[in-house]
Length: 54
Image (cartoon, rainbow, N blue to C red; front, side):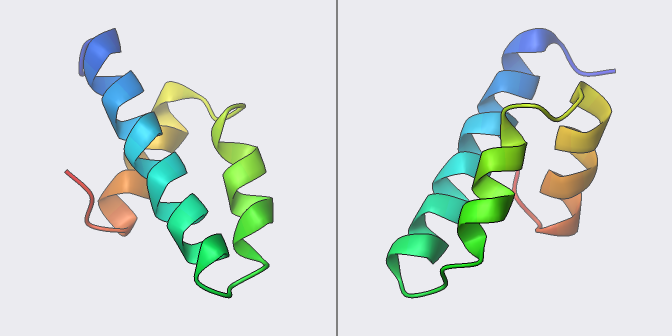
């Protein structure tokens, strides 16, 4: 399992990703953005992998 710093870095990348999507005219991204803060570490890793964020 990655260390906590790595998880937080991935969480920030997800927030940036969904924030940018929302600002680019994809209003549904606000739902995903709001979920990021309550995701478990495993969910953060899974979502980041799915979106090819490293």
